[in-house]
Length: 266
Image 1 (tube, rainbow, N blue to C red):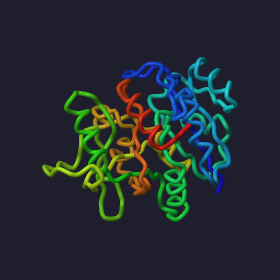
Image 2: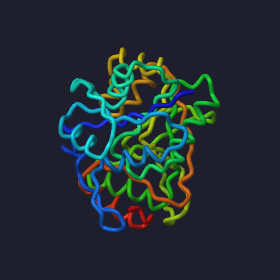
Image 3: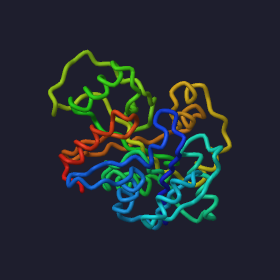
Image 4: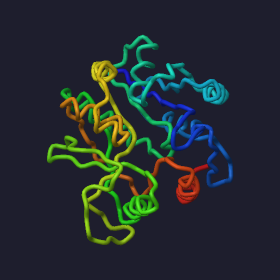
């Protein structure tokens, strides 16, 4: 079952323009752009046949080609990463059984998150779309709550049923809990990891649907599937002691660099 990873990247982010070209310093002090670090994360995933960067911006294209990435140019009219992945898959001529969307703002994504996602798709022939979720510990949950208190839109949380089918995704912290948790204690809140694995038919269908009101309100592309009544399989992954965070705002840069130093990432 051939697997393609697409890294969608756009320059004109409303919250953080130019984000893919922001430099992040690793444990040794070396600075690499966000798109380079996302590419490195994708290249570390086992069982993948091809990795491409999908963008509509010449600056991102030039930077990615500069470190050896394969680039697919897509339309500036793509509303989100899923639409960009659909277009990139079409430009490449199809031929892949699973298309993985590894969003270009998650350089801390461990390879096994993506490998677990691909394995879940292999093991469930009925799954048209799957995405990872990570149980928050107290430190991660406090990071979410601090962002919301400061009026920042941070990571996304997910709730799902007993079969792992998503009930909802939100940029608010859900479910509500009044309890407090030690830094390493597990919590009932799940961080949605910004990776998706699609069957090609699901990608093609997605591009044909108009965005719904929930997607518009939350700014979360995966809600389009739920609003169309299509199930989304949530795959719980294990952080194995590592911290995970996406680059959503400029304030996330020092947070991610601290996590990279903690994990001894170069």
